[in-house]
Length: 93
Image (cartoon, rainbow, N blue to C red; front, top):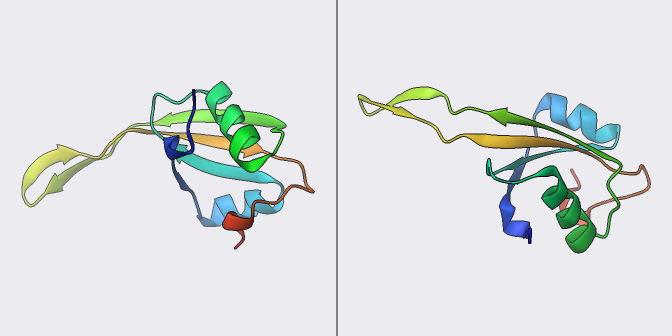
């Protein structure tokens, strides 16, 4: 069962905002989340029927933290197509 807490954040970059005008939301999640779970979240919590979903896995960037080699966490990004008339109040920019 998917939960709303599986969505880490909504991405607000220049590209993501241009896609949002076309009815595509960019959502960042944990790597274990699947397309069906994202579809279920949008249906249950937002009441929106998803038109399509594209996903990609993003590996964490190798960084140095206070001189110690480390790595950022991996995440998964979903491009969720929603109908043009659908709006999510909490995501209004």
